[in-house]
View (cartoon, helix red, strand yellow):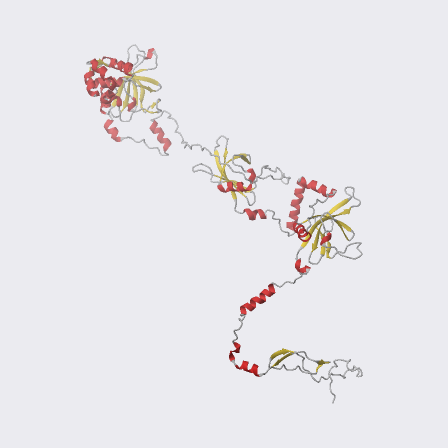
Length: 634
């Protein structure tokens, strides 16, 4: 029976035994206890080092002994020894506060550099000159760099800002480390004391000229060393950068096209689009300038158009809205200029793909009340703005916007005029065709037609055109009381050369003096009426006409005897002296010459019919009784 031996663990413990399969060597340990120093005893836990011999523990730690003297035992026998109030006990919160205070306020008496100057970096701007070979335009090039000195460990770093499409490897020029000084036998390193504005330092056989530094670096040198740093210097400009500055100072159309093409290529490859106006948008979002303006349209059917101009400060766009009044007759499209940039130099490309000039858009400083802006050839005048716009200009440029009062023209409602009468039918019938699609007969005053339908006012008249041949002609002018239609007939006169008959047919006739149809009040003895372009002087009236006018004396003031007598109030003394009959013509002459009172022929007839005699005779033979007239005047 064979016994299987375990795999040997080590062949170095016993070299005499060959390291062959089936052979093994074990280290037999007498004591396998783990060494420890924490011992619990009667007096509580204690830490005692163990004495070791090789790898085995030879002795155990001694158990601490307690003092069991009589004095100690007497004190412990009293249970109130736990409540010792000779001193104030420290609470748990106070112990915690003491720990936190000690932890937070602990600082070494002498601070190391990594603690005292933690995250403090001195920044210098420098340049070095690099020769350029085989180039007829330039012999050297100035390369700007930034020197960083870390105060916490005295390391330095030199980096060069990257310039797009420069063709030169740029970025970190010298990595961060402690740079040794050249030609120094002691092998010292650069420190902050070796860096100054205006100095030239040599780093790895390359000379760097320090021209400026930041504000923290200046304050550090002033506080630590009491030294005021020199003023910043301008780095020299080589021929290459001078040519670039000259090209960028005068922007060309080709550079703008190339910039747009580069941006398109970047976006097409998955890059992000530049948002150059993000800061402007964040600061001026929902801030809008509001101006009131108008445009005088000087075309044939033009008028003054009023607008409201909105300038959005977030993106420098302009919106113009029309203020359309009620019943203006215009289409309800209030947007005159859609929100977009308004160019001072509008350009329309005749052929697609042509190069457009650089856009010169309106800015807030271009919008001033009282001035004119050009919108696609229209001169828009700004005459007022709101309070927010005034406050903005006061803060933005210190300019106070004015307010111009505009006298709005009075709106006149223009109505369509009706066409003139063509002579066929009555004027009312022709006018009814213009007012309605289905003509209706003109309305009639039936009450007046029933009461005054058979009453006609007739007057004897003569032509008042100044022709001797027409002076002998006599006419009858009649006007109907029901519908105020006028007609004229000529009377037969012997050897006049004119035949009798109708001169003007009965119809509504226009009074040239009032541009309205004739009224009953326009006819009285002594009046001049124009019918068919012929003036007629009314010489007399028939009895029926006089009676009708006297009955309706409210409508005919010349037939009101009391009203006519009141006009002679100033003539009482003269009439009292006359004391009898006075001829109508003498009374008219007396009132006109001495008192300036105008009396028409119809008024004389009214006085003679009321207060006189011979009322059936012509006017030249009528008389007025002064005594009856004085009684009426009183």
